Length: 500
Ligand code: NAP
Image 1 (spheres, rainbow, N blue to C red):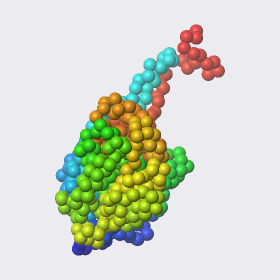
Image 2: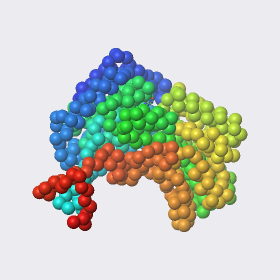
Image 3: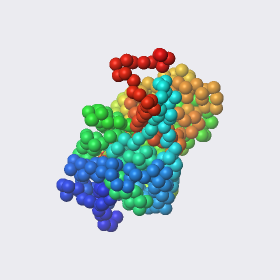
Image 4: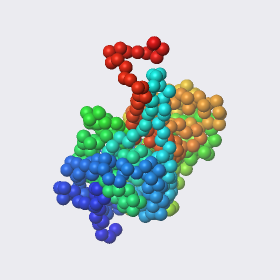
C-alpha cells in the first residue's frame, strides 16, 4: 500500500491541522490496512470554520457577486470535477472500497449537479403581489440563509456532498462540510477544486473528525442557519432535536427499507436484474436498497431460483478492477452489523438460500467482504424485514395480490423508495398512487438524477434534494411593502379595501 497519506482540513482557504493536534486513520476496505490520516477536529475547529463561513457570507466578494456570477463559478467547478473525475473516483475506491466501475461513472455524472444548479442560480425570481391595499407596492424576494452545515454519510461521499453543496452555493449560502469519519478524503481533494474554480476563501470549508465531536458542535453552533444532513435515522433524530433548540432549518436524508415488488405479469428477466441491482450493487450499502423483495406467490419459486443463479455468478474482489461486481463493506463496524443481522434472520426462522456469512473466497483476500445473501420465508414483521441492514442481504417476502403487496409494502416506518415490476399500465399507476415513498420506480430501480426531486416519506427524512425545488430549501422568502401614498393614514383607524 505504501506510505500513509496525510490530509489536512480546509478552513478559510487554508489547509490546517486540528486545534487538538490529534489525528485519526482511514482504512482501505479491500486490504484492511491504514492508507490515510486526518486531523481529528473538535468544537474549536468548528467554531473557526463557522466564523470563516459567516464572515464570507456577510463580507468580501461572495455577497457582492450577482447570481449569474455565482452560477459561472459553479459551472467552472463542474468542469474541474469533470477534468479530475478519474482521480476523484480512485480516491473514493481507496477510502470507501467502492467499485471503480461505479465510481468512474458517478464522478463523470457529478458535474451535472454543478451545471444544473449553476444554471438555476439566476432564475430564482420573486413575485410582485397584486396587493389588496391602495397605493402599495408589494413584492417577494428569495434570500440565502447564511451558513449551511452539510453533514454526510460514508456510502457515496462526494455525491451526497454535491447534493447539498450545489444548491446551497447556487442560492448564495456559505458551507461547512463535515464528511463521515470513514470517508473524508474525497471532500478534501474536491475542495482544492473549489479553490481553483475561484470561490472566495471561507465560502466552502471542510472539517474532519467524529460525529459526536465535530458533527454535534456544528449542529449546535449558533451561527449555523441550516443543517443539511444525510445519515441514519437515530443520528437524524438527534440532529433534528439539537437543531430545533437553535430554531435552525433542517433537511434530513435518512434510511430506508424499500420494497421492490415483482408481479407475475412482469418481464422476469428484467425484474431479476432489477432485484439484483437493488440489493447487491454498491454491496447493498445504499439508502435506496430494495432490501425487501416482494414476489407474487404464483411466480415465487421460479423467480427466486433465477435470482439466486444470477446473484451467485456475481464477481467479488478487488474494487479497483473493472471486472468486479460486488466489493467490500466499507467499515468493520458495518460488516459486523450485517453479519449480526444475518444471525438475527436465521434466529427468526428465515431460510438462508444464498450466502449467509463473511466471504472467504481467495479473491477477497483480507478484505471486509460479506457474501451476497438471500433469505426466503421472511415475514414482514421480522426484524430482518423491518430494520435497515445496509448491506448485501435480501429478504424475500411472498404476496397474494395487489392489495397485499400494498399492505406489506407500506407496513414499515420508512418511505424512501419502492420498485414495481409489471407490464400492466393500470397496475403501475395504481401502485405508484398507493405506495407511500418519495421515489417509486416502475420497471427500473436505483435511478437518480440532478433534475428529479429525491427524499423520504415517513422516517426516511424531511425535505427534498435534487430538482428545482431543492434550491428553495436553501432560501428564505422576504416580503417587501412600499407605500406610494402621499399621506400616512390615521394610525388608530384600520381601513379595509372598499371603505370610503
Ligand atoms: P450516521 O452514522 O448517521 O452518520 C452520518 C453522518 O453524521 C456522519 O458524518 C457522522 O459522523 C455524523 N454524525 C454522527 N453523530 C452525529 C451527531 N451527534 N451530530 C451530528 N452529526 C453526527 O450514518 P452513516 O452510517 O454514515 O450512513 C448510513 C446511513 O445513511 C444509512 O441509514 C443510510 O440509509 C443513510 N443514507 C441516506 C441517504 C439518503 O439520501 N436518504 C443517502 C445515503 C445514506 P461520523 O461518520 O464521524 O460518525
